[in-house]
Length: 595
Image (cartoon, rainbow, N blue to C red; front, side, top):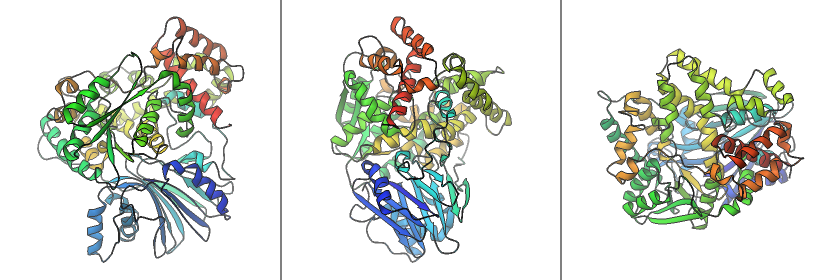
């Protein structure tokens, strides 16, 4: 796991600037810094040494080729054995050593041989000199880029805040990004909060040569063709087999590995499988001092006892939240309304302080196997306007509320640009469902996996983990699991009223029954209860959002914010709390970028 950066084409960028870019991402790669420059190009890397610690120095080199890499390749030993039969030789045990040999053999299709998570940059000087950027099938690792004003140079980095250190960075904010944020809870790619800066979508390959830029999809096969009629039992057995195999590779590291245990089904199942493979496994859970709704710590403790892990209970004091909000928002790169971002940031900090560099998480199962109620509800909604209700379920603020919230000037700008982002989401989904390529439920799931999940969930996991030099590994997002999920019909994913049925069935032999059969509860911060008079977040929101110079007033009406604050003071509601929280993150982000 690392942070990478570089450029191709145009005038030379002086080393001091690259030092600044690299230093901005130091937490994500504190163990070693490597950089190489040639005629019109630079590749750089900050390394977080996980595998083959004594070796693996980047950039990697082959005749006419240079490469930097962020991520982990879990099947690197099998690939190494294959490449050895082709005449390649290796020293050390770093997973990145296989990348350039694979590229020499397979060209751009080499990424189809990789099982893991990655963002890879290759400078190929063998024929027409070019830069190529590759991202994994799920978009687990971020990569941002922009073209210089005259189009002659492309610059890229793992983090926007690092990219912004370059002197020609186009830092103009796209005003429509605010509507995209409130309509989608995050800034969905490939656009970003900046008008001329892009991010690579899952499974992408970018090629840049002589001022010409192309972006396409890498040839990845994510289809499994099971034998016989799929059933919940068969799917559960196959899932269990796959996950045990994947986790045996993911737990293989030269540094300590732990697991995040929220108390929910997916993380509990992940914990149990990991504990069966690793003796004296450490588990981590986060909760809040005091009595709060949706407290899951007792479920996490039950799972830890059942699995025999060394359990670490992290307790946050809500009085510290204002300072914590300001710290974590700086690492987000872009506004993200997930309240549990605060918890994620603090949890990874505790993992780092305990001496761990790698943490397994249970992310991704809900999106693959239909774990959220909104999926099933929308799939069963036969009305012509089903997509309007669904788009509200994906939004931080409902469309009708946005009409009251936005200033007249900003509302006019949104309308002139084609309307609300949320309406566009709904229309897009409705069209995809009508196209009939997949059933309705599967269409919703794949839309989430490739359009929303990488930017709302995975960016947060990646950026906030790396803020504390912690690599998050995600078993459910490995290609073998994705292939299985894509092969299953809707009636297997949601069976007899049970959502995520294959996961629940597979977990039964591993985790307590109380965890398997309890109602779905999202891992989140209870903001409705925490944004009340006397609480620290309440005071912070009042101080920032109602201040005369609040930057968010360029987009939202002061009176509307005051009305929301009054509602939350007198009769707290989930909608008012989420809107205020979303605006708090936006205001903090706007303030951080100019401070």
